[in-house]
Image (cartoon, rainbow, N blue to C red; front, side, top):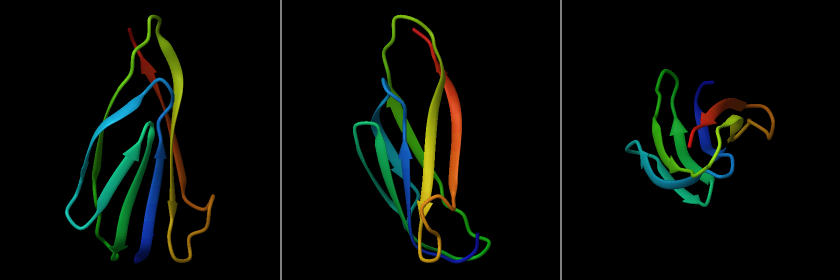
Length: 93
């Protein structure tokens, strides 16, 4: 994608994960509530990138597999569902 304007990424972590800390790259901001992170990108010009580090914790008594993490980008000209990414993870006791 090129020239993202007014970009907002919403990242949802699976239960029982809870976000404890965020580190958003300069020029961006991020907030969280429970297991949902909102990352405000503002504007990203062509050939630029930005990074967000999410620290989360979770407790389980048994191994939990195929937990799904999802991220969705909304911006000028990018509608809901146009830019979605998912991944899975395993949480061990």
